[in-house]
Image (cartoon, rainbow, N blue to C red):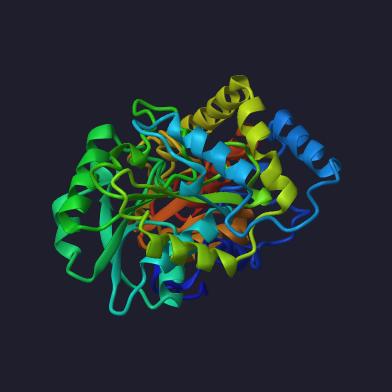
Length: 411
């Protein structure tokens, strides 16, 4: 029987995948295909840019980068990231706006720690990324969820979001492009979010780890575009766009032309917290300027084409599977949410049960929606090679037909 996971805040995606892998049958009988983790390096179909790898090799071989970096990050890396992000903004950034972190996960910790105070609460999207809830729990920061609406292409009802806030609300989190939903927010929606944050007098934490990984009708609009309306804390990394999640090089950036986060006491607090952290290796930081400047446009274009192909396959095939429905074609990031219709399936009690039985019977891993805060749904990752994706979806179709209340003789 599948273990009970009562809320998305009790277990990470990695933890959920580990549990599912524990029930996989003999791998020699049928290879395991995971649609659980957003790690494109798990297959050779996605590959890091040669220019990025060469930049790291050159930095390491220089022999000058074996010591400690400043706890806030190398000045050259901070400046390069500031310039990179400012390309899409109506104002400039400086190196002092940027703090280098060990991946976007550590950037999340910095953001929530900086905002925490006694009795504080934060507004988080549901479904969302479980690390936020776990981090908030460690910081004794109350979580208040706002719902993303599938029928609105996973936008939230901002009036409902606003109604959750009170004088103890310290921030609202927006993930764009969306994880786990694969949505990309419009300029107008993000502008409305900024105006709401201004009214509530809180900053927006903009998780843009999938920044620029968009391939639909909505282009990527950085939340920092609206930094003059409300202060923005932007989180990101090299991980997804450069296909190097294991490098663990991320950033926490204050996009705040009005200066709310440039007050000496605020800056001092951020810098002191950075003193307690271990950032990414010095040679990786030193390679950042060349990684950003030397990676050619063709690499990024190829990545987008590969992701769009995976998104198209997922959307088309899933909607042919009994008991499953993907209401929104992914337009960005690397994953999508799929609705589970238990009324047409037998011997399946909930989304967690579905995932455990699928892993046991078909050696395919998908993440139950309950792990992301949305019961009755599933998260499918499409950042794998097309052949493996089609094979996995084919096995899922066989599984659903096997458990269908209507006997389908062709299966």
